[in-house]
Image (cartoon, rainbow, N blue to C red; front, side, top):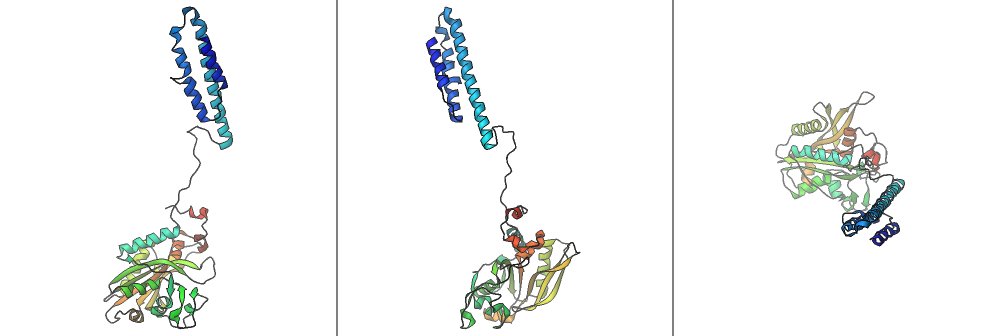
Length: 336
């Protein structure tokens, strides 16, 4: 029996513990219920009476040795983890902060706009970002010499010296979707058209060469300016609160007649100012004729708003470039 005890002692002393797996292997081999030390104690009944005292003492010494080796190795492994990883197995310690993703402020503003117009009975239509001259300009009653056709305002993908119908452009507004919709579907039409648009403009705190718009179109028999203004006022109240201050003033757009713009009052450190949020008007009869809709039978209104401007007003952002810089410090301020 003494020889067996000495062999277990030798095995303990020669066991190489280098990581958590080998530490667990040591415990299972020597200290577990089915380990060699516990099995050795189970043989105590076979030891002659006169040898029990010396054998029992040797067994206890081996058990103490195994426990000591185990505890020392475990402490060293924990110390190494603290040294190299800065943490221990203490589950009561606080975890490092983690950051969850969220929707971009432009996405949040656009989703809110969509939900408002869903409530007002509009659906969504979509169209291509690469447009021809007819859909982007001509059908929308832009004269051939309109400044928006000039290279300084429009990104031309293909510019031809032939008639304007040969030009291809990155759309300068989402109004071409209205043209495609009216060409494909007879009234009544009640849709919004969200999407990206492009203008050849200098990048400043207030302007960018790419931004987002939401156009709206309602065409039916006996649609009136009163319905347009009521729709816009309802939108402003749902977007900015029932106490929002707004005004509607005359304006001009080639594709609507008469045309209006809506401003809201924005409080700031200087006291406040009027800020334009959208343009609108009754669809010009020339636009109806371009898509083969009878202007004597149908009327309609259209409006367009910049999602970027609405998001900036909504969240108090004073530089449009922040919306496109992808700075995580900025985006973390808009949890969704």
